Image (tube, rainbow, N blue to C red; front, side, top):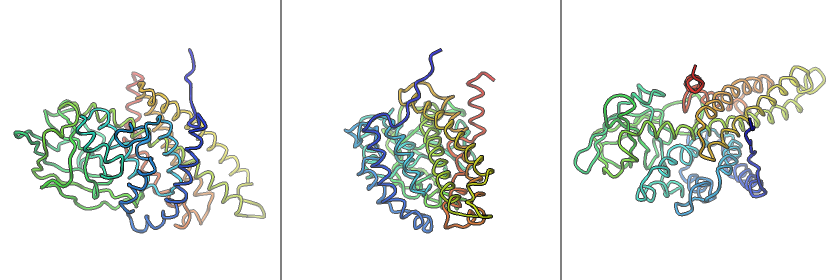
Length: 385
């Protein structure tokens, strides 16, 4: 059987030049403000426009909607370099805008919807959120209960959402609603402008990590939107959401892998400078071997993730591969950050060191976008187990 062509993102000189541009931008314009954004538990809305003006929000979006029209590997590179902001909340907010809340509009939206919602989001003119999770429903999307009924030329929406990234500042939400009977066959997607009467933002949720990203509870009380804001076919939303989740889960795997690599860089640097018992900490066999084990596992995760990226970029079926990549890399990230924090000793527990923040932030990876347990269920079904 022919082996798959696992292509690294540095495929051409253009890709390599883009990586340098992305890294320079992130390290000069975003990373210096990470501590400030974390303390404030917010970052300025203007960041969306600044990042969009650099082209980073629409790398593989057609130019007529404000994108760059490039291949998916540019998105992979951007996500890898974005990790170097050392500000996971900011990274989450930006990736929701570009790779979670909006790609489905490009995939199934009408031309009018693309012009009204997709283009402005890619240009950083409107902030987007993805509204799926509810107080009683997380990964069990088929049982969501936010209702949407047709009334003439309007759709009337009632219900609540929770854990919504960009929820308090979004100009619109790609919203999952129930339009039909119970179960997956009665779910639809709508584009919901947040300036609608009856919509309200509840409390902002205090999280363990990702502090600079707002995560909100949302309420919908007889909210009316035009029926033309129905996205795709009615009652096909569950299918659309499952397709959309593939891109979201791939983002998690890409950023987990890049994050682990950054942590190992930090650990090696610190371990080379910090001395104990007369020699650098990193020169002790226990740490040399532990780092080598992690570097080997990270490289395996990268290859698994790049294979999934390749399939995704070529629009090939990749449910199993993406689920495996998310499961493996996000679980590995928990082990890597634990050991890098341990290598730092007492300083690993001090906020001024990046590893302390990473220890909190990375915990989300095995939960968000489908838990590790859900990934295992998906993989088991793919293998007929």
